[in-house]
Length: 282
Image (cartoon, rainbow, N blue to C red; front, top):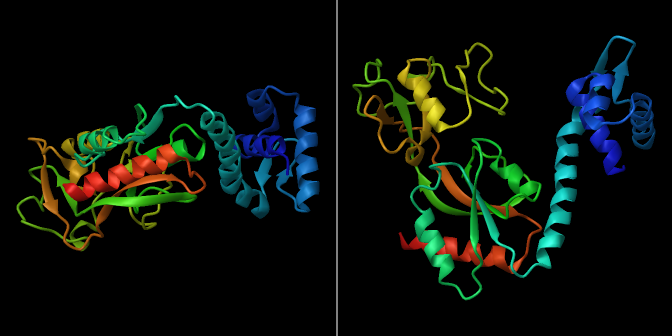
């Protein structure tokens, strides 16, 4: 496959309309149609069912976009890393979620700054669900992620800390008076729906309002619109209008430092080593 053809197909798969996809790509619609037919010929499968009024994905077409995006990100990241490898003054770029460092970041940066090969570290702020993509497409070199919530496909990681999870509730909630609760206690509650994350709850469950980060989630909880289960550090500091209760049977959350599996640059390995040392010292 050619990356250009793959990019064209993903645009059509997202728009399900050749005219709109061609406009997004700034190419003529006949050229787009020809490229899609050429891609289908290369693969030996039909990717789209199309008529004069309707475009839909075949089963093969539904399988391609997810892996195709990863492939395009990998190509982009490879080019970016090649450029940066020759730049001896390049900064190291760390992407985090605001407040998502479990109070470890200052110690990590101090430990790294004390190493003889330390570079300047640029801090980037990502959303609740997109920080792993920063690594895959080369926008960042390392990332603080939460396992098992973030997608670790194509990434290596080191665990920095393991923490329990808490339910965040309005103070007048029926469970607020309990010292601890279970997942079964929360089975009928309405969880927030994280933007960019496909809903995977039970079909009969009703997802709550869409939120982009923990701050928005906490606001929805204050309004009585949702109840969330969060890693303990993301629920700190305790908001005066909310209560936190440990969920004793919820799987633990891991704060990890992640990087691309194929990234062996010395500045990345040095930062990882410093972060692991700093986290063990706390």
